[in-house]
Image 1 (cartoon, rainbow, N blue to C red):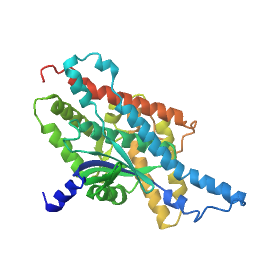
Image 2: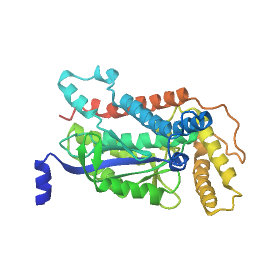
Image 3: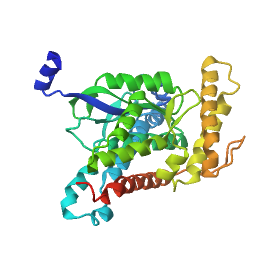
Image 4: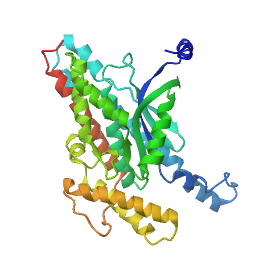
Length: 343
């Protein structure tokens, strides 16, 4: 440990490794720059346009954060069903196994979700890794269905919390590069350190509840990931693993609405003779290829034309996410409860 590190520890700043997801809502900067200042209150037409712009920018960011918080709040609730099956001497360990320490931080027109991997903070850190992968996959699909696509990255790196929900450090730079330079289109790219962390947890053969629990979740997480055509590891939110573990009851209209949005974006940019439009078309072509390679998993037939479907309501999306985190909670507790040969 360096002297500078020692000094910071004395001042209450603790450096640690953090797992972090950076989610960026695409297209927000163009929306925000439509107005330099708030229009004069007497100009009703401009006021109306300004309110629409504000709703389509600030409202979208607030909505994303609100959804993440609600879903992860549900994800953090313990299961009373499993608790009733556990002897009194194991209940404390059971509660500690279920701890979730994910935090939120606004970052420009996006959102950061993160957790410390310091062993003093939590002994069941795989809860948070699994939660990061799950919430990013859910939000990626839901945001497409809602017409507000996101792009992001997940990785591990060093950082320090200057204040509550105020993370600073190299890890932010890492995920920012993943989002801006690597992801390139609406998807969530997973960094190398996450993969190494999962491998290390699977290799930990320490004979106690916490090692077993972390090892079990570390073996499940790769089922939620896939290698994309360019070699990047991504959150595979339409893959068989995600469907089996999380989205078994996902309404098909959510996927169809996201698929239709992708087709619409392709059509809008196909014949535009500008570099930016050509780039957008190419990126949505890649996203469409991803969808069409997975639609059969969900028993959906690819179409050359946009589907005509009823609008997906926010209530239906919320119901889907409640189901997702209910399944998370069941999965988290099922294995350790029955391992009576461990202390």
